[in-house]
Length: 354
Image (cartoon, rainbow, N blue to C red; front, side, top):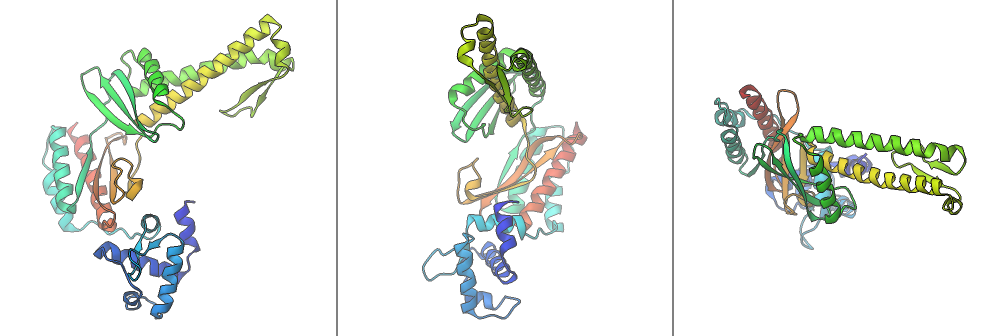
């Protein structure tokens, strides 16, 4: 259960209605909403003073904010997120919007670039916002891979394909990674590439991880049976080999060599796990998403929102995405079906044209 879902469930009916009305009014007008305005739209007849108390409680919860001392309230980023997650009523695509999108995109074409240009124009024209179009992922064999750190929570992977195509993808790296560890990962992968696709490369890494685990198990078995070592959290990915009486082992050449070999294998296993996670993050695709304010790390614009939906090929595999960027007070109920419909239409056109 998310934080916003938990907060929403704890609100009583009156608080929920006040919150919903404030957000809907703000999304429509962009202006702060006062208690007297709500007395005219509430289902339950209550005084302005009562509504003010409710709004103060919602402000204490971090859902509403007062831009000025005597002004009404506007939703916070947390409030908008809660509204989108739990109270948003998505309308059906209007015939007029559908007609505009269809008119722009339904002509047959084998030129993917031309089609995606028209997608961007169609979304901008219909929504009056900026459009975002992520082109289909390239599936050719890779010639070279490079990771570039852009900060503690963002990184760029540069993929150079054997057919000359170059692609840049943003992703969030695993916690604790440094520019140095990213360079090591890239060097390791480049030594393995050999004309493989990204998916094939992941398979190779998984085999390497499995082989290292088997080697560790084989070397450790005798030590465990003789009581010199024990597995901690056995069966877990994070299992550790705890060695007992290590000082005694250091005097025995064979045991000390085995212990050093196991330590080296553990280090190697951990490095390959990190690299496997890099590859997974590089190639993953999210479902339909709404990013509000500072959640939108791609642009780092606290005052913007992004509504994005993936499109798929005939095999139902995510190959790209389309979206709309606008202010946080987007008409989400209208924008969501437009983006969703456009993504489905693009996927169908690309599948039919392939």
